[in-house]
Amino acid sequence: MSAPTHIPGPRVHGASARLHWWALALPALAFGLLLLLRAGSGEAHAATGEASALLQVTEQLLRVVA
Picture 1 (cartoon, rainbow, N blue to C red):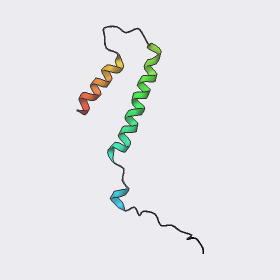
Picture 2: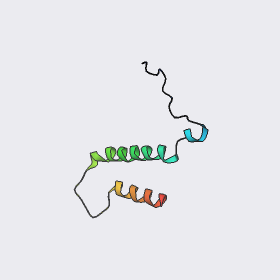
Picture 3: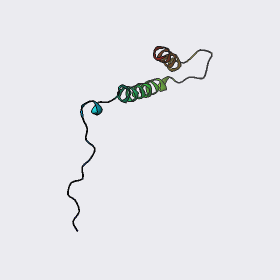
Picture 4: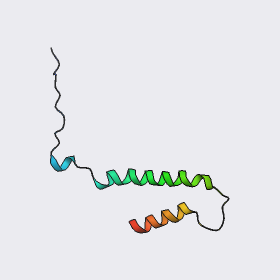
């Protein structure tokens, strides 16, 4: 008995082939946050009473998104 040579896969039509907005936004956001962490790591200081730049940026992003 021979095996089939072609196994049909799911068919993709028009709108179902598009990416959702978050499929691009989440990786871009993660990359940006990791870049901020990497850029700010050379300026590491002991904890003080003032908020770090990363914390301030994160708070601003959350205000924009919410």
